[in-house]
Image 1 (tube, rainbow, N blue to C red):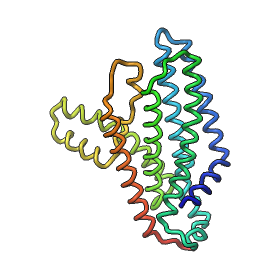
Image 2: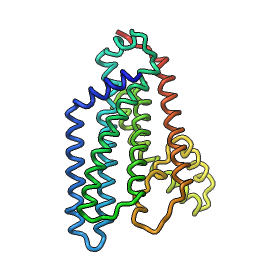
Image 3: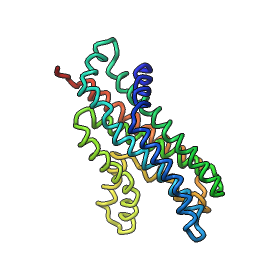
Image 4: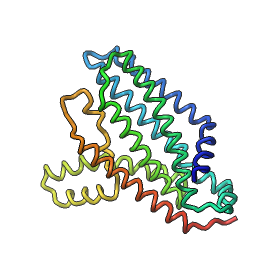
Length: 253
């Protein structure tokens, strides 16, 4: 498993698309300084929101354009036959691919986080624990997205996988809003439907805390613990179903 993870990391580290994603991500994070200079009295908020948004957006682009091809390229290029002909369990193959891409994703987020921190210091934006917790939640959200796209990649094409993952991303960010609307309107059907969606889809809005940075809102430690455990459980279940489907998959020469 770890050999597959290492080989995946090395292979992706040579991907030119990855370098372009990191470059444009860093460039746009730096552009937040320009936006801050044009703002009136809310420069700190703009720098933080824009910088963290770029970390998440370019992480999502990496998952969509690189992660969606990870499994498909092995099957299409028939290298999966050579790998699975060795004494390697299919479970280890999937988990190795996941760990390898997770390491690349961590490197992307880390580089962009360093640049963001430098931008925050240049803009004299106060650093806080919430700022770094938000980056951690962004990385966790990206891992969930990759696990979901890896799951879809075991039985459908990359294009469909991308479309479905984009749908999951939108729905997962809308569940909390849907629940609030159901409560305010006393709509029981919408309420239970939103609760059903909360079980099926990850609650990405719960991992989105960048909006409260710089506000008087104080989050309890239990908030971070509950959302972390929920996300990790969802991640483990998604990878489990991915392995189960991949174990039943047949490959034709």
